[in-house]
Length: 234
Figure 1: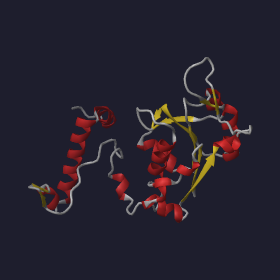
Figure 2 (figure 1 turned 90 degrees about the vertical axis):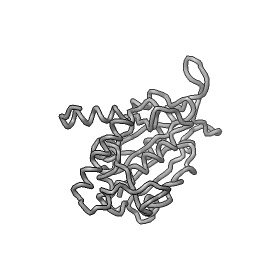
Figure 3 (figure 1 turned 60 degrees about the horizontal axis):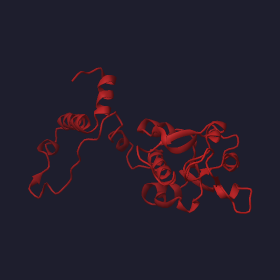
Figure 4 (figure 1 turned 30 degrees about the horizontal axis):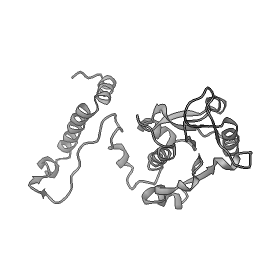
């Protein structure tokens, strides 16, 4: 079973949306499990403090290394799961990284708050900093939910058809091609004729071409990487 442990000061946020749809069905069926751990439960003072003022001064508060160490150790003693810290300064989360995580035993995910966490705990507990994008959230919980959803949907048996994941955006380094369904004509716009002609080879070629066009236009960074991997030139 793929097992996720999320360390947060807001455990009531989980499973949240992950209790719905395919992820929720898989959770109920025991395909994966989720443990939300309250970091405050590992504080040692009567106020259950998890943060303190930043060394050197400055605004905000910083999450304490000792409290986080107790929480991480309780959740992941002799544990082979990767330890992730959701952080805007982390390595951007990619589909390849998601696939690697989904193929493993699960993950321990630390959700920071305030101005961040004490740098020493990152090194002491070998936390891998992961970013959900180039923007700042109020805390790591929403980013953790996104990471978990991305991983769970790749677990065996969660999606209806294994082929679904193979054709999605980023699966081959390209954005996904446009999709259509009935009605045949919507507000004067028809489904491309090639998709309804029954020639599967032509459909496949059209989808590849459209995926390449979209990637080149919208994500030149992905397009450049795709060309480099394939050895193609524009």
